[in-house]
Length: 344
Ligand code: NAI
Image 1 (tube, rainbow, N blue to C red):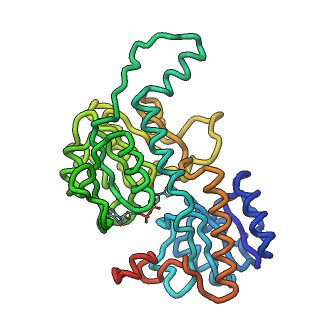
Image 2: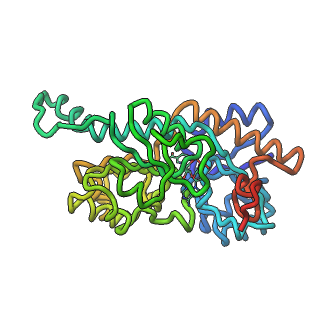
């Protein structure tokens, strides 16, 4: 089986080469992202392997089908970059539903602690032998209320860690998890109550039509003054302009962003010698209370190994049986939703 691998980074190759060689799968690595301009590179391959910022829209799907490419193997969990409704009956889409929820949840906590204890400032100060503590006052996490939107794999690990800090958890999920609400330290509430009561809000839901800009001007207005926002999920969950306005007005206390709405133009690349074209991103980064990492939350050794192993298993399963447990449903684009009869 020959697979065209798009948006390749140096850290992808070792684990994919290892697991691919074990199963006789040949990966041809392309640095470019998959989109309508680059799709012809997939000519002669059985499938494409793509990541979060590759584009699998109608045009790309049509061209892949014309070239006889049968498979899109996502090496990630989220699939908002794939037009699943259009893919119906045309091309099979496989994904890696979970590779390390710990990697993402721990990164969210790392960003939170860095932000509220001013570690990013301290690191720079002490390297310059500036040992002043002026402006470094943080706050305790113990006793604070954290709002968690999305209580799936990552959200639940995040909640466990927060409980270790002695925080009260208010959760919101379209499909609440059984047994999570204990009526005390963890409670499911409406989004309005979550916004009104939370000192910190962390997003762990997928990007869908419903969750697009779930954090916007209106929802921020419902939040406590000084709220800390963490987004390690998908950029378009947050209206970046509204967030910037909230930061400028001092209503938002801090933001920790691993994802950004327009990240596909910038993230994963080195723009250090260039003038950044995106004024909103540049302004957010310039703020002392905003921390941006470039979609790095997944990047642990464990996660990379699991991603490669599951992607290869998906491809092998499909090659042998024409089926794969991690194939996204043609109808709803979500295997779990499909099993519970919630296809649209
Ligand atoms: P999951 O599928 O286990 O959990 C998602 C949860 O969101 C589910 O409980 C689901 O019921 C809930 N949900 C669905 N629609 C909702 C809605 N309209 N409102 C509120 N909740 C809703 O997914 P997992 O593994 O926890 O990942 C969560 C997200 O994290 C992914 O969708 C992806 O966007 C992001 N992610 C980010 C990474 C990074 O490197 N920054 C890496 C991996 C995932």
